[in-house]
Amino acid sequence: MTRDEVVALLRELLADILELGAGGAEIALEQDLIDDLDTDSLQRLELMTEVEHELGVRLDARAWREARTLAELTELTLRELAESPSR
Image 1 (spheres, rainbow, N blue to C red):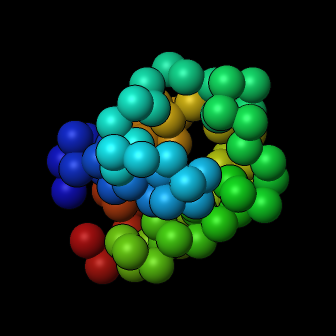
Image 2 (image 1 turned 135 degrees about the vertical axis):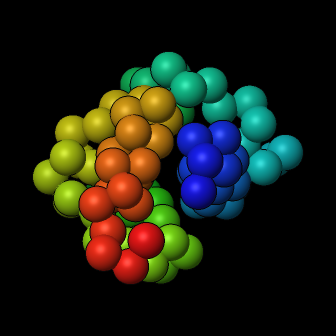
């Protein structure tokens, strides 16, 4: 899966969770998920769970909680995909 595909997936899932339109296209890579988008811990956990389900990987919950931007979540996801034995 490419970086662009991961970004698109994260944007789409986050837009669904936050009930934003346009598939999350307005979510910038460096936008702060907590301060700018007002996500809470349950929404970020839901996003992580959805990504795990969609991609069949196990994500690092601690790193995921500490990530603040879509760019950081993208890098964490790509790292897990690269390290996953099923990929």
